Image 1 (cartoon, rainbow, N blue to C red):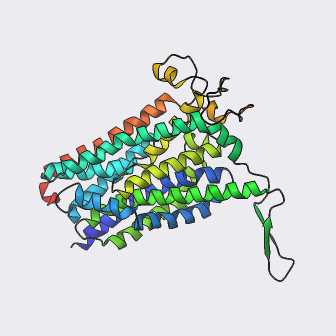
Image 2 (image 1 turned 90 degrees about the vertical axis):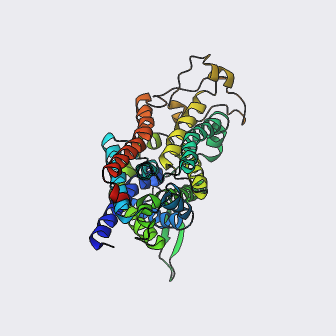
Image 3 (image 1 turned 60 degrees about the vertical axis):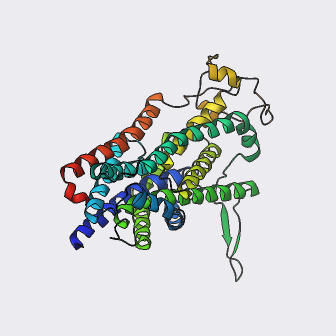
Length: 389
């Protein structure tokens, strides 16, 4: 094994993990940081721990798929370095266009290109993965739509997340042993809501680790260049490094979708997306956390905005109701309807539900990203077949 080649592979792996950490940390902890519930440094530290936990447990199933199931032959070290380079290029292109990078999809595309060029592609596995890529955004959208249409107003009334001025907790040092008490303006409801935000952020970080840790190192694990345990630690450190550095900015502007809606709505989105991603990672499907997140946001806003009309009208297009992000931003209804009941008055419209051009850009990158990765990988290994063997 060439040490210099392994060094290049590790460097490429760190680059991929670093960029994953920058984007996924913002998605997991941006709402909590924006609400002033947790510091950026604390968020990055907690993110690193739960990324490791997700990668060490559920992430091994995704690792097995990427390293051994997509193609029928092990990925050599030389091929692994090239695959990681294509993944890094896909991340770079996505960052240039300013959209969340579909890392899992880009990784699968690069490995599939290798399989096509060398005649080792497992079409059954690829078909199973792609079918879940089609189903996931549909599931995310409809889960969000159902919650927004039938449950959100009541949830907003019962569990609205509020923050008060001043510290959440205060330390009294009058006695021999310091005691911790609630801050001067802190309510018990705020303590509970803060705990919920923290737990969901940890769950989101776990989900990110389960889906993304394998993306950074699987090509180096396939042929034994790195042991799985060593690879997971390497990927975790790289993702953590991204969380402590470039993620500080993404946590401030975690994307218009999460930062521009109430914290309760963001938590619903995070919980839904993390559950979908963790479940698919458990069965070994490489899936994009961003995909489930974006489509749940759109579904939640759509469901909230269409409460004044019947589901049949919405499906048939028999309404002129404007879909707006105001459906999520609006104050709780004056007269809260019971869960499942239709709302009589139109929801206040403020702003727009989503920018169609932005959504189109996301969708196009989910197609272009893995397609470009597959095409570049296929072309490279077709021209240089000796690298893939």
